[in-house]
Length: 409
Image (tube, rainbow, N blue to C red; front, side):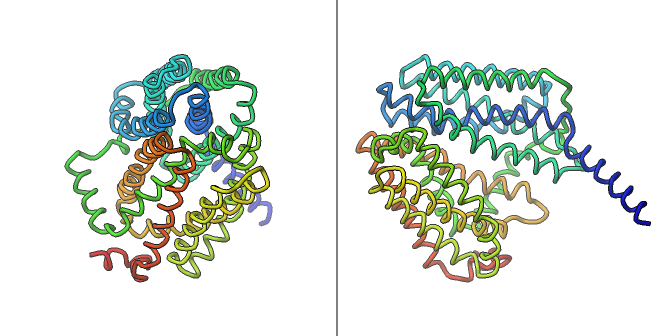
């Protein structure tokens, strides 16, 4: 009996592994990793530092970052059209060619408008890659394969800026050619094997249906819409200024800055699960208030922080505060997602949050250009503090899971 059970378990594990980790998934995950690694390293670390040291204004950097995310977001529907009519391999080749063009334009152009053009080209290049990965997922292993792709995506987003910060001290030319080499490795990953997609289930709804769905979601959650946009905009404000703020105002070199980012990310990762369990037990409202309050306090502390020890402490506070916010916020948003339309519901919510990501960097760059990086950080801290106050005064019943649609009418 025990032998039969072991054999059955072993065969089941083999079937699970074969379905969850297929050769195509490994190839596409590799492509996604290198593309997102280079994109995140370029936008978060390379572009702000390189442009500032090249005499390009922070306003232009903020505009470039906003244009990059806007191109990525707005191209999603068109990307589905291309992938539906061209082969995935051809689309990937086009994506990497455009990414190389954008990287070279931003680095060799050395003009504000060329920096913006380069950032837009990289945003255009990244947009179809994620859709191709989603379209390749098998329905009989959707959860496991989706989890694998999300893990690779999160790793690339976190590792890109941190890794590049460790080599920026060796010069911008070295950093650029390193990014180009990694992009080339990702391109090589597209040359092996075949790619098959199933885009029939991913074709976007008609424009009329999308507008109707968006209107229905906004109507049911209108008290939270301003907070959704403001909180992502507050984070976006910091994107074009954090590297220069860390070096010019806090006295950190790029290696120190990378260490600080690692500390903040590690504290967040360690705290997420226990904080999520506590939020479910004690209520999401108090965790949102405490988390956003902690983020605001930490950002205000950042204004007077000097040196690595102080910056490390602030990063730990930021990471802990973010771990308070993230589980509670996602649990709150899930109350607005209908079970029969999860994809549409999350798509609408992500689009709303994406507005802040597009607006924030441009506004942050403008504020830093008109004043300086310190004012941008102060504005971000003030916006986060306002969100904490807003959630503090919002009626408690609006935070009860499952009751959102009843209380928001």
